[in-house]
Structures are given as C-alpha cells and as structure tokens.
Image 1 (cartoon, rainbow, N blue to C red):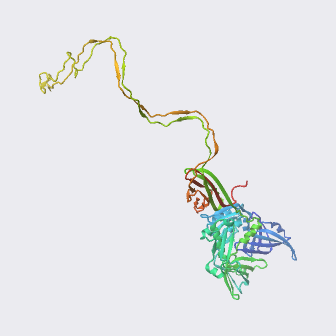
Image 2: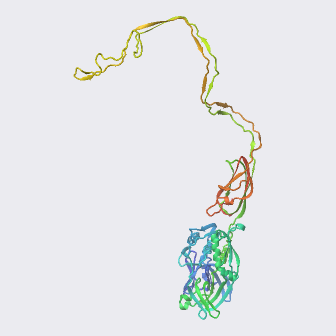
Length: 637
C-alpha cells in the first residue's frame, strides 16, 4: 500500500512515512501558491517529525501531486478523538525566505525575461530553485524595493499580454521553475451524464472596464503616466465594439512600483484584456474517473483547457481550469471541484497575503517635490558676463519648471584708490630725430705766432713712378720703340725655333738716388676764417628708465556707481534666449537647457546661465527650480 504523505527535513532527507495520515486534501491554483492539508491522530509518534517548514511529498493515488512544506498545525478534540491537522504550502513559498533588500532595477533593452528571472533566483541564500523552460523574451524594466523573491518573481509576467503559466519540477533537487504559454488544446472533457455531477455559473460584470488610466511612481503632478508614449493620452481604451456594448467604463490602475512608462503601459494593456469582458466563472463538481480509465483525458489538471457541456443548461464552453481541489484523497478520491474561468486568476491578492504574512509592507520610497532657489548678483561687461551654475541631481524624477528673473543696475565699485608699492617703470621706445642748431655768423680766429725753425730730414733712397710723373733733368720716358726691327718680323732663335718680334710699349725707369733736403720755415702766423653755418644732431631711438620708490596711496572707501547697460544678451547652456530687455520676470528657460538622448533635461550635470550687458553694469538674478526627487541614494548621516 502506497504511503500518501512522506516527510523530509530541511536538507531533503527523508525522515518519516505517515501511514496514518487522513483527510488529505489540496487546492492547486494557476499562477498562485498551492496549498494542502492532512491530519494525524494526536497519539501518533510521527507527529514529532512534522516540524514547521519541513517538507512533505503528497500523492494523489498513484500520481505524485507535489512537494509542500508544513506551515502550521492545529490540535482538535472531537467525537472521534484528538487529532492534529497540518496546513501546508507549495515549496515555491521557500522564495519567501529571501528578500531584495532596498532598491533594485533590472531589465530594459537587451535584458530579457530569462535574465530578469535569473537575477531574482541568484539572490537565494540557499539555491533551491533554478531556471528551466522560459518561453518569453520580453525586455521590460522592473524595479523592486524591500520585496521578497516570490513577490518579485510573480510580478515579472504581469505586463505580458499573452497567457502565461508557472510550472515546476520538484522531483530533483535543486528544483526547476518554468514559465510557459499554456496550451490551447482541449485536454479534458466534462459532460453531463458522464463525469459532470454539478455546475454553477457566475457572471460578474462589476469589474468590466473599457478605459484604464495608469499611474505609477511619484505623487501629484509628478506621478508617472504613459502619456508620453501613448500619443499624449494617459489612458487606453478597449476596442470600439466593447465600448459600444458596455459603454465607456473608466477605472484607474495605480501601482507605485512601476517607474517606467513602457512597463506601466504593458501592464494596463494586459489588465484591459481581462477587464473588457465580464468575468465568467464555472464551479464544477466532477467525478475524476482517471483511476478507472487511466485515460489522461479523464484527469483534471490546473491550467488545462477543458470543454464543459450541459445541454439542459445550454452550456457548451471551452475554458481554462484555474483551480483544482480535492478535500479527501483517501475517502473520496474521485470527488474533485474545479474552477473554470474565461480569464486566469489575478495573483495580486495572493501576493498581498504573502507580503502581510512576511511583514513586508509595500512601502516604496517615493520622494518629494522641492523648490530650489538660487540668487546671484555680479558686475559684468560684454566680455565678462555674469555666470550662474546650478546642478540637477541624478535622482531627479521630474522637472516641473525652471524660471529666471533678473534686472540690471549701474556698475558698482567700492573704492577710489588702492595701496601700491615702488617699482621700476620703463618708458616706451622713442624714435630718432634730426635737430638743427641755430645758424652763426663768420668768425676769424688768429693762430699764435711761432719762431723761425730749420727742419732737416734725410733718406737713403727714394722712388719715382714714371707713368705721368715729371722729374726734370732726372728721368725721361719715350713712347713705343722696336730697336730697328719692324713689328711682326719672324726671327730664329739659337735653338732653331722661330719667334715673332713684337714691338714693346710704354715703360718706366726707376732711379734711385741718395740725398737730403733742408727746409727753412720762417716765423709766421695763421689766420682761420670760419664762415656762418649750422649743425645737425642725430638722436637715435632710445628708452628712459624711471625708478619709482615704494609708496602707498590712501584708499577712499565708498560705493561708487558707473554706467548702466542699455540691453543684455542671455545664454543658457550655450543656447541664446531671445531677450534683450534689461529686466525680466519668470522666464521659462527649460527649452534652452541641455537635453539627453530622450529629450529630457540632463540629470547629474551642471547647467549654466550667462547674462552679458552691452557695457559695464551689474546684474541681479534669481533662478527657481521645481523638481521631484527620489528619496534614494546616499547614506544616513
């Protein structure tokens, strides 16, 4: 005989078979935690092995149902004696044991669904779960703050517009988690007179919605919407045929966990697909005859597509099994209760229950609207504008406005003289000049009279050049001569060679003669006459060097005003603001601030305002920034 309940410790070591277990039941819900329960007689010694959070493996007949863990126990005394009932939950709940502490952002372009799920499972302190078959590859961006891993895991497919189903394999450790698209093929039939024992149909139009407004992170005017990526509309509508059928029924979806417009929009679309038609749910009491036929079509599984037929009630539907439950596997093995719906169960309430039980409240850091005021005043001129820089932090979620107000005044100085030390000052180089003197009249200046004297000189020899020198009676020079042989006569030398005679030209004679001269200079006087004349003086280029000794000037303190500008030019982050007036109030400068690739005012950087007057002047200005800043980042000091 098979034991329907087996107990394992935290290390997955088998510790007990519960042969005496009874009232074994379970509820298996699609995309939610499964639950189970069983009872033991209070006197059964194996109650000692049923410790909280120990694992139990439950079988439904010969079919392994799933692996659960013990959550709580309750003792009860009745007519049949004292019993202890144990409540269990699926081992997927082990992901409740770990959390994403503080703030986590994952996803966006290039980061697909399997990577997001892996990021979550990698945060397990004990690696009990691993990824298996993931049939979705979306690129949504997610953020979690102080969230348990199961809550984060279940939130990943919420923006999907396609049907999805979590499945698992707990037969091998570590356990495997899959995220798949459920089959649309009919896997089971429920027919009146065969296996249909009772059916209840419930149609609930109270949640019908044909228009959804989406709100995410933030508050007030700073709360996130998807209007920027939805044609300026912060809402989405169902198809016209649904609006015509049910009217324009509006609702607001607000979840401050969503910080990105595309993810918020996808989530609202997925919700609208479910809410645009009334909820239709069938509760079916059926007889599971699989134990008799062994035909898989007679076995009911959560997530399976089934056809339900009841001719008397006019029911012939194809819908998905969203919940399978049995209250007594041993006593009534074929009695099964099914919930069949035209939409899958929303897991939001299930996740909320999990958060409450784990005492993790859904408190996400939001932030606050801030007013940042910057004042400045400075002297300036056309080449030296007044400059104001202000910083926009990375944590800024929204910038509501940036307003500039300013006015100009006369240039302002605060003294007339300043203290100075001595030094050397050099003039600039000067060019040369011609300066004529005053003209003077002629002057006669007699020399001093001298006595007579005889001067004798002697020389051993001397030379005279006879070219044009005439030395009487001493030399003579003649012209051309040929010694009686005509010019050009051929002559023979003693060696037998012939030469041509050439007449000689002019020549000179050098005569050397030793002699001396005696010169007698009688006494006489000289008279010099200087005629009237003037002088021109040339002065070359030059510099003058002046030495100034150390000294001080007395400072005359006060406020002294200079010129006042007539107009100004304004630049914001290098962009010209088309204003020339000398004053202005509440000027919107957001269009001129530098932008990032998405067209938003740049964060994490300095922005600069320059105001340049047309002359010396003074500028007084004020910049007011209204922005919404996240309460994240930094420390706690």
